[in-house]
Image (spheres, rainbow, N blue to C red):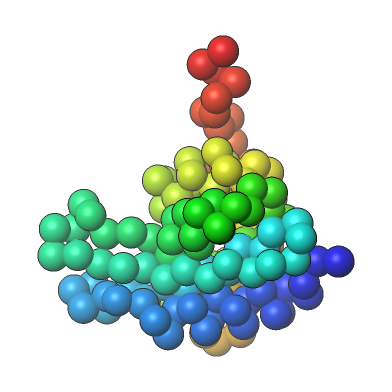
Amino acid sequence: MPLPEEQLIKAAAEARENAIAPYSKFRVGAALESVSGTVFRGCNVENASFGLTMCAERVAIFKALSEGANEFSALAVIADTDRLTPPCGACRQVIWEFCGDIPVTMANLQGKSRTVMMSEILPNAFDGSFLE
């Protein structure tokens, strides 16, 4: 049974506390739930060479994949912003590739949240089916 949305947001907020963002100060947390109910947390990790920075969503996904999970039911992302922050373009592609059309909850620290399907965030997605 999937976690209630509030619990997934809470897990993302807890992950955000570990963010390493000394340059941008833009701390983000993510929580990815597998179909088995395991929650994988991720935070953004910045690097002075900004291109090497890793977003929270990708950290959570790669952590899950590296631990053998490969089917996911929901993702939550949280940041300390007034406007809800959607995943960046690179994360959108990775989410689609490994999670498919899952619900993505965007939340902020003020308690505001919105859940949309991944297909709304990344319409006309490119995936492996184009390579066949």
